[in-house]
Each structure stands twice: as C-alpha cells, then as structure tokens.
Image (cartoon, rainbow, N blue to C red; front, top):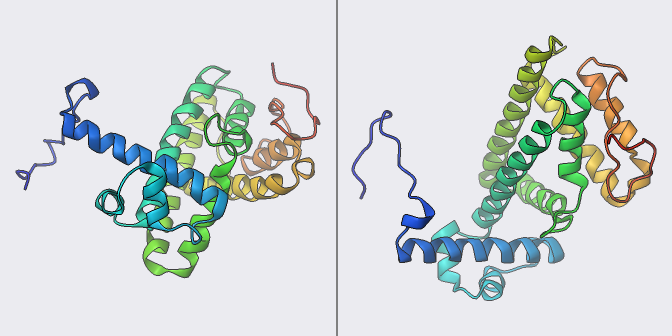
Length: 237
C-alpha cells in the first residue's frame, strides 16, 4: 500500500523513459486491450463481444483485462476516456492555429472531432458512444458513471466557451453549464443524423444552430466541410 499523501503532495507521474520494464509492460498491455476493444466494439457491438474475444484479439489473457479494467464496462469507459483526452488535445491545437476571436474556428473543431474519420479508428467513436449510452441506460452502475462523464464534458465545454466569451467581449446568453449542455446536445444529436445521412446535416446548419445558442445569429465564419457532407459552405481557408 502506498503511503498516504496530503493534498499538497500529488502523485508524481513517472516519465516514459524512467518507467520500469514491468510498468512498460503494463502500459503496453493496457493500450493493446483498448485498441482491440475499439475495433471489436465498433464493428460488432458491445454486447456481442466477450471479454475473452477482446483479450484474444489483443494477445493478452482475460485475467489481464479484468486486472486493468475490472471488466468490459470498465474497458469501454477507459477507451472513451482515452479518446476524449486525445480529442481535447487535437481541439486545442486546431483552435490555437486559427483566429481565437472567431467562433467559427471553435465550431469547426468541435464538429470535425465528431464527424471527421479518425486516422486510426475511422468513424467508430460515435458508434462506441452510442453503445455506451445504450448499456448505461439499462444499468444504474454504468449509468451513474456515464452521467458523471457527461457532467465533466458539459463543464469543460461551458468553461471553454465562457473563457472565449470573456476574451472577445461576447456575453453568453445562458450560464456556462447550460451552454455546455445545449452545445453538447446539438453536436451529438446532429452527428447521429449525419452518421446515417450526411447530406441532411450540412455544415452551415451546424454553424447556425451553435451560433443561435450563443446568441451570435449567423455572424460566424463557415466551417470547413467534413468528409461526406454536402458542400454547402465554402472552405474557411
């Protein structure tokens, strides 16, 4: 058992180069299980894939899967957390590369993160998000964990938009928490429709919806068309 730590003594992360061989093996095993789950859950569905199948695809034992994640539910949550962090980093980089005062840059980054195929995982993110929601809706344990996850996402969205509003002198029409909830609802709802029929959800519609929530009307730069969408708007660059 680790010695107790006071709030002023956070856990120190071990740099990759200083990790012990055992820690490196654990990290590799975890990553291989997550990658295998991403492929299988998206292609076949969460309930159709057994823990044994994931472990076999990853070249690991079922015991290793339970040791790292506690089961399939924990593995699915871990997978989506990894993707959430990666997406946050990509969003920050894309927004930083554009005009920070232009909300169209933010809209483009957020919408693209949901609809642009990932170079490694394709468009399976939305399928996995839906799989998790369906499973959570049927079970209180995983449902509580998913609710907490959405709370964190709403807060992150709201805080980011509040910072942008303060920096640009554009007051939000609602509280940051309510703004985050509305923006998340628009993005997820439209991305689900876009997944089945891209031309029914042109990029301009996304801009208008998000701009309306933020009280901006249509005064935003058109976002770059995503793959498979109708070219309703000229590229932003």
